[in-house]
Amino acid sequence: MQSASLVACYSHLLFFQLYPRFRRFECKVFLTEAFRYLGGTCAECMVDNTHVIVLHGTGANMVPTAEMAAFAERFHFVWKAHELGDADRSGRVEAPMAFIENNFYAGRSFADFDDANRQARAWCDKVNATFNRRWHASRRELFAVEQSHLRPLPLWIPPVYELYQRTVDTEGFVNLHRVRYSVPYRLIGRELEVRELKDRVEMYDGPRQVASHRRVLEPSDVRISIPEHRPPRGEGRKAHATSPYEQQLLQLEPRLGPYVAALKSKVAGQGGAALRRLLRMLRDDPRDPLLAAVATALEYGLFDLERLERLVLRHVGREYFVLPSQEDDPEDDDEAE
Image (tube, rainbow, N blue to C red; front, side):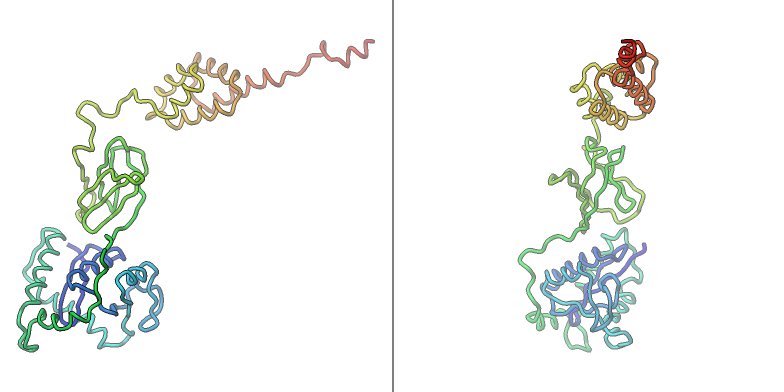
């Protein structure tokens, strides 16, 4: 199980969690959990010079990204990065990680990341409560003395989430990080808003939540389906269901019904693209030449809309751009006089 360890340490109190990747999303999720565990925040949060937080600069000149600066403002602290080459400050950040690697991982196995993080939290509770002979107290007892210096948490802590736009595929799933989550089958082809939270993945159609799944961290290339999202057995997707384009076509010109039905049987899928193009022709072209061209196309089984458009132009040319014959030429009449 490939993982990235994120460690928070206030004075001597330890808290850490494991994640499959390290992005700003995981960083904000972890720090939110750490602040809840500590019961407050400190004035400064020291980090190494990671690109996840740092926009540019190092040490005292470090400037965080706008996203992470806004996160820090929400919890009333500021980011601080240790200076390059400052072994003492760098060690203050890295020493807890070495302690965890040497004392937590040995002899342990994990079913998944949820199991690993449950074990990590239980181990932190145990270590923080264990008496330390060098300090003559436990980490938890030392923290109790210093806890009053922490800044209180906001009254409401909004959930951390990452926002995506996804189109529902032809099988009724949306794909997020190589995991496919089901949505109601009636939403096939719709574009949904997908929110990735700490342990849930939620799908929204506008303001309405249409699906919610437990977030899967691994393995990849799996499908997560809810039975209620599938059509009832034997129903499937109704073949006779009419698309919005077909409804508009038949409402504007009912005489196109036979050609529309034949067109749908000749093109792949539901014929949405072909019907949309035919609807555009109905709106743009003269009605009589179009109907005449459609009648000819239906008679000879022509369902290529490129050829239908050329046929419409031919009928338009015959009816609207007829040149007068020599017998009817008024100039000839004048010469005869």
